[in-house]
Length: 184
Image 1 (tube, helix red, strand yellow):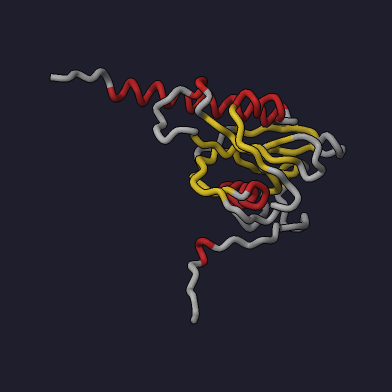
Image 2: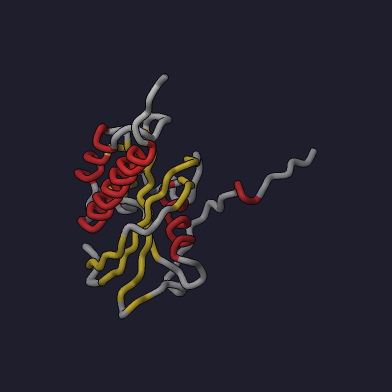
């Protein structure tokens, strides 16, 4: 018996490696990543501050601290393709990537290297049981306050703040657009 499997649901269980395709801008290595998020309840009408918003953090490869998935942006992919690839490789999630949160310039904590980092929100639709870096990273869903406390990078905390601000603003706009309801 032969079973056909759609390739769109297949995941390569090997991460890309090497720096030969890496993008650089003015000597800074360009990195991209996502802040994977979800709502604990099915309805997305609750306030972000109430704790219903959860974000996914991952352990660093060296096991020192937590962060959001990110990695090198390569020459053969768009910025969003790179962000989605890195998030799948490191965190094992897929979803809808949204408008860029911003660009940050930062210095590596371990190397004397400067980076240019871009972050995107990713509304998670699927969490995989197997992904390329499953054996070298841990992932954990937590509320925004917990994530701010454990995230080891200031620039990622700033990106998280931008995401929360955007989602809070969108919720207020959505409520205003609906307007008051009346029952006859």
